[in-house]
Amino acid sequence: MVETSTLGRFHHQRLDLRRWLPAFLTSHKTLFTVLWIAAFASLFLWQRNIVGGFLSFGALPARPMPKLRPTAFNLTDFGGVGDGVTVNTEAFERAVSAISKFGKKGGAQLNVPPGRWLTAPFNLTSHMTLFLAQDAVILGIDDEKYWPLMAPLPSYGYGREHPGPRYGSLIHGQNLKDVVITGHNGTINGQGQAWWQKFRQKRLNHTRGPLVQIMWSSDIVISNITLRDSPFWTLHPYDCKNITIKGVTILAPVFEAPNTDGIDPDSCEDMLIEDCYISVGDDAIAIKSGWDQYGISYGRPSMNIMIRNLVLRSMVSAGVSIGSEMSGGVSNITVENVVVWDSRRGVRIKTAPGRGGYVRQISYRNLTFENVRVGIVMKTDYNEHPDDGYEPTALPILTDISFTTVHGHGVRVPVRIHGSEEIPVKNVSFQDMSVGLTYKKKHIFQCAFVEGRVIGTIFPAPCENLDRYNEHGHLVKRSSSQNVTDIDYDF
Image 1 (spheres, rainbow, N blue to C red):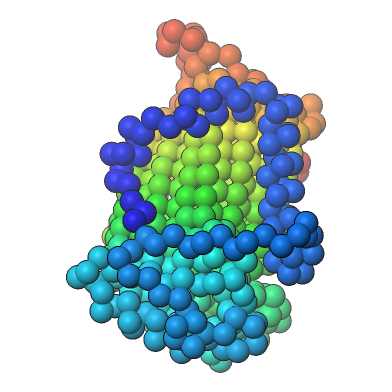
Image 2 (image 1 turned 180 degrees about the horizontal axis):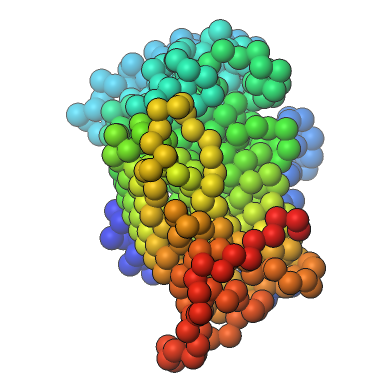
């Protein structure tokens, strides 16, 4: 069985990777090598799936699928046909129904053999392992009439894009316990191209569905698979506890694939995301907790989340975002050993009046930005609301946010913290920062309505809003005003 981890284990694991990675990443030459190897490997896997194995060095024996539960089935046992044409929805449904009877016997495993398994959306069950063999591809039917409609998420008020019901996810589960989705890097492919086109042409009447969505569940593991071309958000755990996402590759075109976020933890608690490669058409990771008055009423924060050892790319958004839907609160988040490359932004916190909630106790450590337009962003005027019923006086709190060991090359604006008189950013700290710049201009460390400190020497020079401390933690210079505004969106 694959074992899930609790938060306590997250912070006390002694992995070899953790010992050598920070020092390893300080060498930028080595870093470039790692980036291009990761990018080439992911591109190879992507193209291999598209063409069906265009590069061959002789037939290799299929890897045997391990037995991770007391009982294991193959999809073919239930009439599945992996020819890319036959619709396998009933085969998946029969398999899940059979597995549901083994809950008191340690659960059961469904093996998806090599092949292209076309299907409409289907549900998982508790105490289940879905195992995708090497060269197994689950394909989502790209005709929305086969996708069931579901009630809107309670913390969003209505469908994210349209009022009323929303489309469900290709692989769905709710009120579950002990679910594993894993394999030998098999693929779940949402075939999102038709969805993206219809969305741009305004031909959809309901909010698009995620690729994988698990709701109101616990003890979830998703590992060693590839997720690609989701119609909407790719992997969406909603109001879940004790989730591990490890060794997952998530792909979508970096342009013209709207809202294809990689991983969106939403009102989740005790979560680990590690050892993943994500290159998508929106935020690679976006931590959420509900939207305006609906999120405030639902009242479920995202908390105790560890994000580490990732390579991320987002040409239109950010590597790791918090918000903008964060009305239930976000706290105790650690982001460490993360490389963001060829992206519009590195890490971002976004919110607005009307959100309410809070973002606090956020720790960023050992970040590397390569060819990133803006490295660190905090934005407090992200004014997108579900309806006119939001309360403008519901102001979010942003506090206790630290950045330690931040490096990179080719960054246009290393820092842009745009607080406001209504929503000031408080207790921000920077230590051990050196970011190579694309343009050697003023206004590259931009601040407005921010209070905090810089410890030691950092590059580029910080804004005047921050207090200066030496390496020993002794105050050197007190800021004269935290309300100085030096925000320039022209470059």
